[in-house]
Image (cartoon, rainbow, N blue to C red; front, side, top):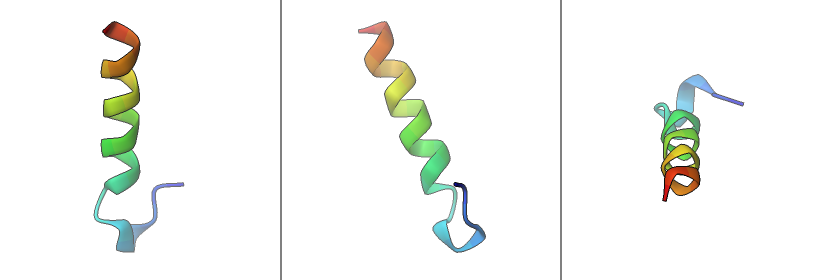
Length: 23
């Protein structure tokens, strides 16, 4: 899911999803 050309975008999406759960 985390493509090298994505610049870590997938990781950012996972982080936002984690924060959304905490909300």
